[in-house]
Length: 379
Image (cartoon, rainbow, N blue to C red; front, side, top):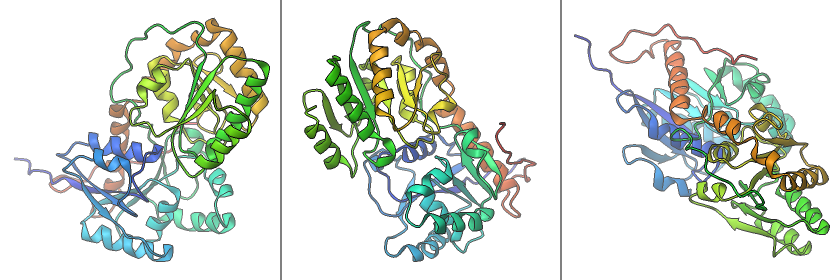
């Protein structure tokens, strides 16, 4: 008789649990992991975030603690020991470094959601962060990435391609879209990487041409006051709205005639996949991630990043040509169908199994060690 398998305890480390791409990925995973095999533990720098209310009640949530960043690795090691963690996953670049610096033998999986060099260029002391990353990445059992493009520039550890878990179910059948609608929607944290200042400049160019449109930007963040001042200075208050955080984004995406992503840096673009699944055409800047799943004029549209005139020109052309804009909907839905929670969880659990099998003494309790490998994504 095969002995029962004790669930392995997996820690997910983040600074907080406010709405964001990495946070939603972790939430989808902990909701969908098989509780007979895995017991998630959510370790946060601080117990903060609107997504906390969605964490299943059987998931342990604990604070790593604040204070000086140099002490965080030791606090992480103590947390991993206190919660008897079998394998740990970190979901942000800063937490990656803290986890890898922690004095622990727990196998560690880090993640990169954007090209590492692009992120480091925007961070404080980029040379120091680059050196620390190169030194510490060799301690990772694996680095999880959502796209092969990001994986191709990761060095120092095995790379595992794990698609983002965006859709809980397969996309619904396509409904009708208005032929001559002019409502634009954008979504994301109000931070420099999202390029909403470029989008607002593009909106000003459209308004100057007399182009009919409205634009709602959903999300919140530190640039809210700055972006609102830009809207006011450009006299766009009757056209452009900072709509704040949306608890339910899907109906807002479904009601739009075009979704626009103006990011300067975007590792993937979960909201774009959501829009594509709902039949809303998408226009995205080539910011790293979107061009890995958007084929120009086949399932969506692409523009150069940080280029307000090009963005305005493309928006105007798509609004003026409804047939071209709507022609991508079926292919976009097919693309979105690849990014379900079930498909992502299957890849993530295969990664966990591979890491535990390759870690001496870490085979699942009650089972023989698995002959699994962590492999790099295909080019």
